[in-house]
Length: 148
Image (cartoon, rainbow, N blue to C red):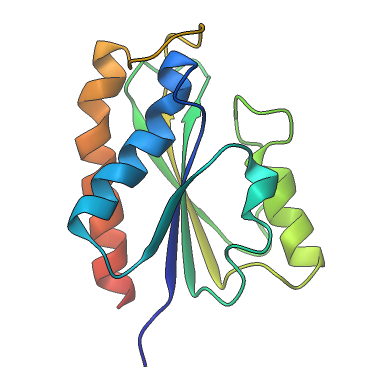
């Protein structure tokens, strides 16, 4: 049996570092065609796209006190209640909990966060975030390899 993996790059390419998630998803898609991959504008768009997945990897820009370009992985378990420092109106934490309540969540959810620096209007990632994209993609490739 093949493990179904979904990789979702959450964000907006027209809000500078908010485009980190889609940039990582595109990089992963270029090297790992066996997974369902795509950019997602908002976390609520995940509902329905990740049902029946054994692993969902969500990539998103974050805002916290970490240095720009910091890559963090959070392995979400059913009992976890982390508050993600998302840049979206409805954060990943609420969407994961909603999917769990609806019995529509993947078996495992891993969030890959890249600390952003510039969320202004415009295209292009800041240098620190641009440098983090391949590191985040490698983290995802490692997760996929261990899930298969």
